Image (cartoon, rainbow, N blue to C red; front, side):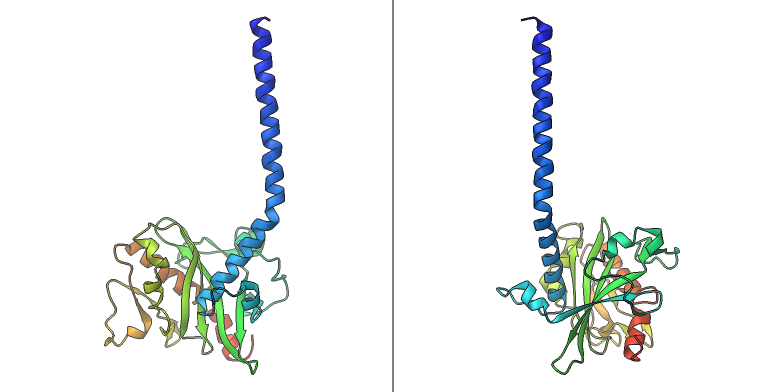
Length: 257
């Protein structure tokens, strides 16, 4: 057998192996996609429940989520909308499409997200009388290394924080990554968002002085992670402000949402 024949056989085997591997990988991706999507949805529900202090370990996530109502809000009007289906709406994808989002000016874009989707999902929890008990709002913004995606839950007064949790981020473990620390997250419940109509809530450098007149609107900063702390403050102030949910919150308080 000539050396050329040997090279041809080697190339044929290598090419065939590549084809087989490609088919296997593609098939696996198609087969596993429904499971991956289901797990993604389940994880989102888990994080929403956790932010609202409603997560019970050992109980079906889907069963717990039955008490949560998903609605769509038009952020341009601050009112509920039926223009998109909450079951299929992807806010992150919509924020990248110029036809379904707004370009933010430098002054507006304190959360450094560049574009804001026109529509947003909100999650409502009602009490036994059918009155609003809690509302959970998706929030996101840039920290030091990454965009942090999470949820903020508010009491029925639409001003008192129930909780804040981040479902996704790439901040430095042990520093900005402390946004996942339960002891830090426990500092948020009971804090206030608005003061005289403006978003006052934010992180400070160091530890909050309980005797301070502004303590209700302050949360301990993340030690050694100033930029992540600033990012969290900025994303909270953006999403609870005029470019985010504030018009909706005001309409909801007035019964006009």
